[in-house]
Image 1 (spheres, rainbow, N blue to C red):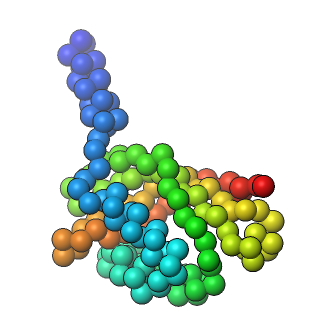
Image 2: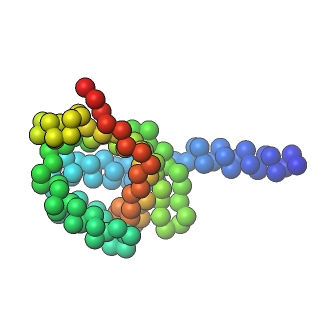
Image 3: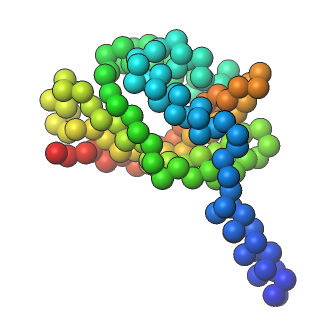
Length: 140
């Protein structure tokens, strides 16, 4: 029984102390900068070719990104782990709206609690998919 408890504690500690793989945090930051710059082609290049929602993401980026002058920030970034091919990160993404969107939405932006799945293709980090747990409006 003590041995099982010790194994569980060690496993829990390893999950909590998991370190980001080399270059992943930097990739996340650079992707947000591409979104802020409204660089549709650059953002599309960051999508994994086998991503579950790749085509919908491309359609959304082409339709929406040129119209959105937003500022993005991430916080509470937690590397959850990897299954060997894919890497899982949970974080909060804060999106600050421009004046046009503030007036349309009635808020200053949103904060989303998300998990993003990353993978590598040709040695480069790519976004495989993102799932949202919750979304809150930022009021003045």
